[in-house]
Image 1 (cartoon, rainbow, N blue to C red):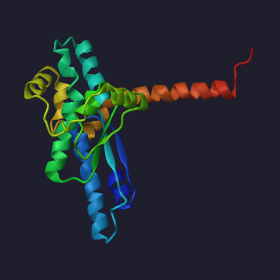
Image 2: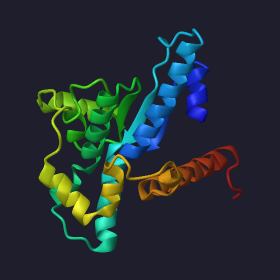
Image 3: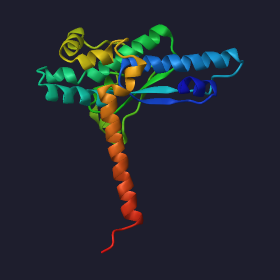
Image 4: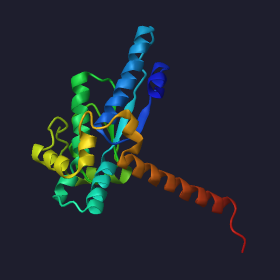
Length: 211
């Protein structure tokens, strides 16, 4: 509701901490409703440039953590494709449905989080050290966003890891389940921990402990 209302008010949004196709579609639909309401009200939409951030690398991290905790045996190479598969699936549905929201990839872990997403109307946001590494890699930026992840890899991920199936399928999660998805909870806990670390740093800088 907030995303739809912000869009109607002319505010561009970034829906971050997203990991699943279902989340990306819910965001796109909310933004689309806001855009349609603006057009119906005779308001411009040219200045609105909203994105939905899929944390590709953090989804991969979650898949790796799951197989360790649950003792799942799977080709480790498949795990490197989980986030990419979700991003490409969401992008394909965006194209089919004509959503005007753009996807943004975040949480780089390997060069495929760039090279596999080249060629689409998406935002790719590598941290500066990754940008330097990619510039020096010699890897040609060949458009690959429209090439689906190998079906055998996706099938194995879905068979071995039910949480990947929930991330990959269009109806894998309901909006009521978004906050309880494991990758979401894991990431929010890490963010809260980082906030606590920052607060401790500021406290010690402003009020050093007595000798």
